[in-house]
Amino acid sequence: MLPLPTMKLPMERTSDSLRILIVCTGNICRSAMAEGILRRIVEESGRSDIAVSSAGTMAAEGYRASTGAVETALARGIDLGTHRARLLTRDLLAGSDLVLVMETSHLYEAARVTPEARGKIFLLSQFGRDALPDDAEPFDVADPLGGSQEIYAACYVEIEAHLRRAMPEIVRMAEEKKRSSGDSPAPRPA
Image: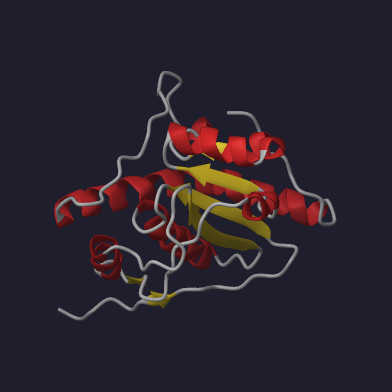
């Protein structure tokens, strides 16, 4: 079996790009995988106006992605070998147009760090809800840290499904930002 081609991080975008920040706890599992997944989805869509980065509410700056995350992503053609954890800061939040978080606790922590960012912070499972049944409840994406490769794989599949479902809204926001001459678009309420 031939190995899958890998996509290396990082991917730079211009200042007028829609800037998406993905947040988890340590920035070594979920948000690291999500950053790689969303970059791939953006690349597949042919868009050059969407920039993706990640951070963690309790990240230890500079830590590498967990072995489970690296192996899971690499098996799917995404190389997280250059990923380094970053702590969620006021500057990262202020510089983002959209913040997608893995857990409700991350939503509250991001809003605590930068209260004025509240309108652009969403639970990943909640964002792009137009594509969900009306009775679907938002939920946290469980942390795979310390789990088996099967747990990491399930987490990867879950994150990818959420991001693919959210992509039409992300594209809409990028188009709106382009039209508004650099003003930050406001996400539509879910």
